[in-house]
Image: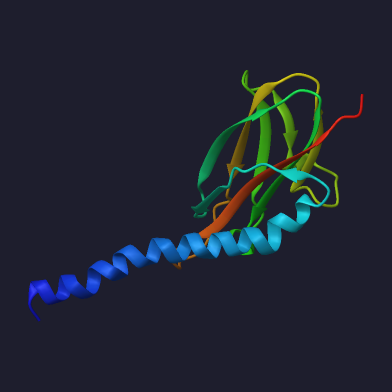
Length: 149
């Protein structure tokens, strides 16, 4: 097989695989994460990534005053027990999912009295496996409600 023929078959495959991963992540978000936003107005940001065991990711989000927020971190079960923390910009811990006694530690409801930015830090646990680590979708969604005055 000539190099040109090989390139003709491999190039579409190389371009198609990332699109499939994004489509799977969007389907996961729609089916598993979005229903947890019930009662909140979802913002238009779609924050999602394909992560592997041992990965850590950070996201800086702005939250506006006089609103009640819901933050949901959804992770594909193949990744295991994904932990996340919410910190202020001075790295002061506000919430840690691993310390939560809540029935659903992946939902964090809170109120903002003034506008500020918060950091969401996500950690995917290492897996002790001889197999190639599996990639999985992690999604961070936020929604809000106006606080009655």
